[in-house]
Length: 314
Image 1 (spheres, one colour):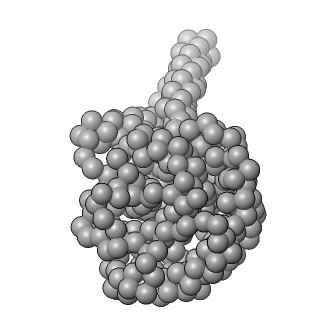
Image 2 (cartoon, rainbow, N blue to C red; image 1 turned 30 degrees about the vertical axis):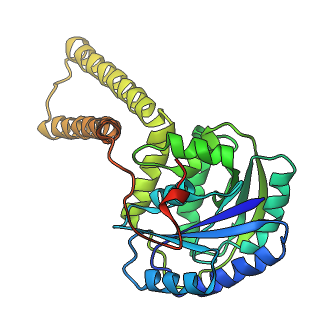
């Protein structure tokens, strides 16, 4: 039995040695399994790759992919999955907020016949704004896309190699790997844990990245934004017709003077704004279709350490 652990790396130089040590301790708890640790450097601007190269020298289980630039965490995870040779593949973050010590229990659930095991956050020791925005996203995604999506989300999971093959073969542009995992339809088993407070570095998830993450998740797996635009447009048009009919009735039967440049401009600006929002929603879908039609690679590997090309998953 072979277990692959895939770790996307982005500005995580400080936490990598400790993460490797904790993964090694976890592997020692499962002597019946052969482990490999696949670190994917997603174009880090610090010395993460140098640290990873040193880890390869002291641990033959460590394998490193270096992407030519930052393609995003989902693409980095996909690159790791494509090169994983394990019968079961674990995905975990590099910042040590998710506990590697949960991996043996995940392996036990997988060996019991569950092809997908999620490690979901029961609580998280993050800043208030991070918790609030995360809970909002998770709640919306659970309500409108996948009802079995964990209430507080997940970044940590184990998948059988047959599931990994589906993920690799069906990945597309603007990938949201965690939504794709649930899309496969394999019923997941969920373990819970409390996400630790960040001890190393700082989060690189700025507002722009969070907005793109939100859009990729919803547009990739739901028609909700389009349906919202349609319903809102119909409702606004209906109100407009009702108001117009009222003005005509008031002018004919009550002699009400129809005037007011200011009110006319307010209505015009509101309607124009709504139209632009709807065009923007349509544009997001059209842009993603264009991205998919281009068939550009989702990531490019610049260098590998400790990993041979013939080990790649085809």
